[in-house]
Image 1 (cartoon, helix red, strand yellow):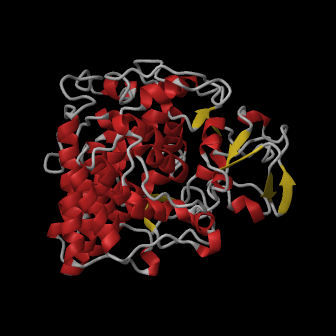
Image 2 (image 1 turned 180 degrees about the vertical axis):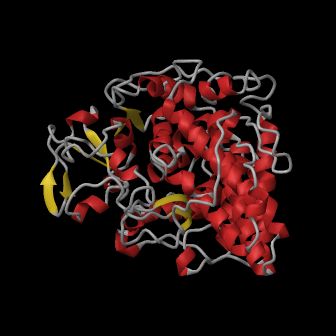
Length: 500
């Protein structure tokens, strides 16, 4: 995937939702296919910001029982992630919102101007498919966090302060972007990307993301159908590699793995790679380079069954061995004292195993949509359609076993002949830790209140937390955006803020 690009001359005016007013002369800047390609590349720029797919992404994992925000300087973010405030004054959340809307604006510019540019139909299909996918991806990223959203209208550049849509309307619009993406990609039968574009969205990514959108929407028949488009394509399989498949997926050597549907490719250079890896490191362990912002909980460690190969890829604790800059060491309490939980996240750690020093941008790719996720969504859809769900979590569903066990056996665990929904809940937790799923899964299943209330100080330093249904399903919009909107944006609008 192409990395950071500075597209032409874009002037940014801070307004509600960061929906930028059309800069003077921008229409005349889109003249050639090369211009459009530059504009498309620029859609990815915000992802590489620190508050893009760095801390702005990872901090939301701290709303779940997998991770806590440790840094003493992040009190506002802690309050939001612990459902302890009706007002979102987290600068990280605010910047993340801003950067995602910046990406949305750029994707919509591509969608608006590409039809009028002279190029081959094949190029047009690929560009329009990618731009529609990215707009849908960005909106879904925000919808999981905030529910109903304001939408950018690329036919009306003067509308920079739109009202917030209901959650139902928000998901309808996300669906429309992804269906358009699928339409364009199907015109090219675009299942595979060239080596130069490996990781960029294609049909698998569009079908897979739509399967996920439908699952969050509660439309399980549709989710199942979209997941089966991916599964039945024959284009994807889980990397096994003699028991090292999951580890390879998160290693430098295996980062272009074919089981990744959508990948944030990175280079080891400032603003050409994410800071995901360094945020998760202990500063004590890394000699001050690590940010010790995000600490995994004992609750997450305990979720892994004995023999689960994913556990040591995901986290390590005191007394366990790890490679550090070419040397195998045993982690001491002093090594990770700043973590505060006895554990350190290691899912994106692999570059530091053999590097000569710790660095901010390692060049490690970050998978944003994986085949295992689609398999588990498929298994879930089968369960939900069979009547096995959060309120009937112990009911075995043999029909879900095939997709479910592909993920489970890759992790080195024995297959389950008829898995239950409870099995699926834990499988998704262990497979997708820190990948923007655990908290949002618990919310959509209606399980967040009971799970967070059941925590203890022994497995989560925060102890039990209060999650109030009807109020906490989605986070408050960043206050700076509410202020910028002059009252147009509001929190908890009625009807339709957090429910369909």
